Length: 114
Image (cartoon, rainbow, N blue to C red):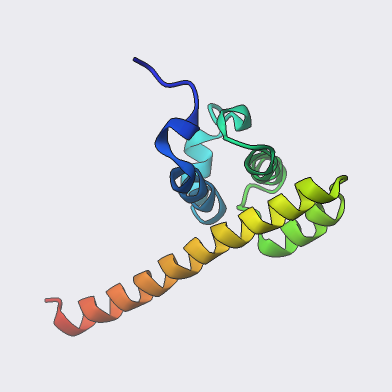
């Protein structure tokens, strides 16, 4: 049975997919035409994906935290704004962990690699 929503894969999958949109321009370029924010679980995730797409479409590079700070200040509704900020924190925690892993992995490769 085909799935119609990313929620079938869980919340962390959705967070990780957003992090890929934010740090991998090649990935964003490949999925841009088929990326549909309506497939995401909640309004905060949908809003974040929409902002990623709009920014990439205009500037041809991934969106940054500074841009998100400006964009979230424009959001109407305290509940949505709070949810977006908490979700972005979760995305960036994952990105920080990923960057630490990459740096550590590279150092280990240099130390033990051939």
